[in-house]
Length: 103
Image (cartoon, rainbow, N blue to C red; front, side, top):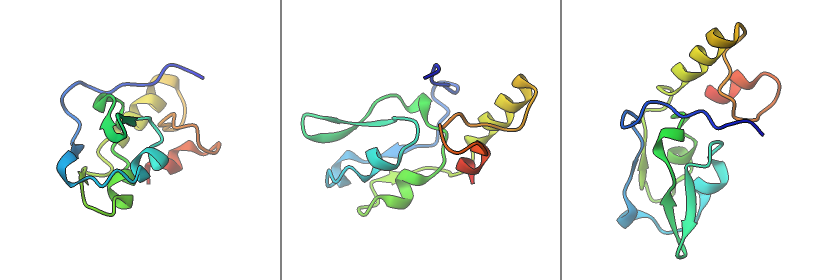
């Protein structure tokens, strides 16, 4: 597995309201970048700079504890493609058409 791509520090739009979280862990299950983890039986953020802002966590949170401007992080996918001389890729480990994980 390659090195996880990080984005610029302190620019990610992801916001987590721990007090609203019921600890179900759906965000952990759906996040392709490992932004969430269990800590002391609760959900916690690992590193928000890993977030590609796909919106999967927000869309699957039953308590509305997460907000993110979905799609913003896909700029990273475009840059990855440009730097590598290929199609946009968000490196989320999905199918060969990995640009699909940014939709």
